[in-house]
Length: 536
Image 1 (cartoon, rainbow, N blue to C red):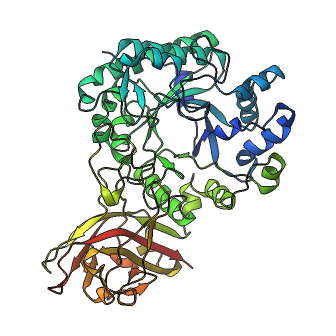
Image 2 (image 1 turned 135 degrees about the horizontal axis):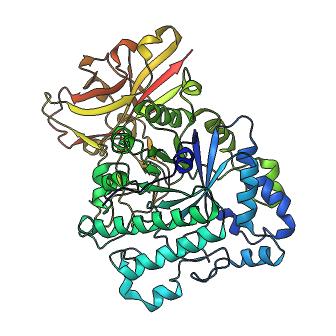
Image 3 (image 1 turned 90 degrees about the vertical axis):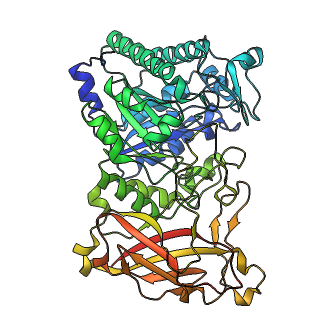
């Protein structure tokens, strides 16, 4: 199959500057008391991130629900929340309002479509009428999702996308495979990859026809798993999509820090495709729910260094100025100050230089309820999907008890700390351990416990603290250089690091137990490992 031919104007549109792509799950709009008579206040609140000065947001991708009901007049989908009817009865189309107002602020505007979302836009999940009528078209996991192995499903989704593309003058559409990547029956995903490729080709050709009729480009993006192998697991032949130019933009990842940016850039580079790795602040990388500013800086700096064209954010918009929130009766969020600082910094390597960062090694699972994604501390291999699971992440990792073997972890550090020694105040390697063998000891004989994951899905998780004195038995190395003895701070083992020990990019961290008391033979786990770089 030959690749898609694109116009010069289309290529120029794909090459627009997008320092930060702001994906907006605008579900708060469904709150019953957001009446059309509050249109001015609603607009001010929801658009407040784009009115911040300065900000590096160049593109806004609105996600208006789960994709199985329509917040617009539709001949294909059933209607969504009744709040939209009230607004339309008042002569206001919220989707068009936000599209126009966002564009007035100089931003590119996409629709992000959840390709296989749930049915909770009307409240508690309840199957839409078509799903009730056609259970034969569904995959039944923890919920009932459309089976893309069925031609009828693929045709149905194409009609949905064609209708919305014709109604609204978006700059592009993103197909969001993160919500939800259950596309084919478990164990059959890669076998059906050609069916999904054909679907994406149909979407691409449909949007190019809309582009021809309206006289300006209509771009196509896809959010896909953060690793090439993960794409294969879910039935996504991303290499073929790139070769045939079926998309203009790839958004790898959702809640993962360890994205294969370089691999995606390599398959995309010869085909004019842009790569924007994604960070989810809410359904987050395990252990980093609503992470500190320093963590988000570290993630973004790594991605920029690895060749990302920009940064895509998701669920980093659940806050706004308290004075605007109070006018709408929306709870004010403390995270607003952190979020607006993130949007001032992470879109540029220049604004990320010389500021404090935390680099970390990722944990498996988490981010959702355990019925959806297994938690790291009770891990089992998911079969329904790779996406959102971080199943290839290395932590928690066991330490050998033989006193000889290292547990090796790769830690990516974008900052050239060796060239900035005079500007650095402190660098520390920080480790949280669990030792179930010390569980019978009294609290006074163990280190403080550490909150590893505070996001309550299913409940906050603390480590099993090791015995006091464990710091004397743990050796850590960076690039085979031994670090000095550890100190203990609030349950963390802290190792001082010299700037000259670190390479720009991948660093090999080795951790071992030098010897174990014979009466404590259970496995010690590395729960978390972070490198803190603090500047003057």
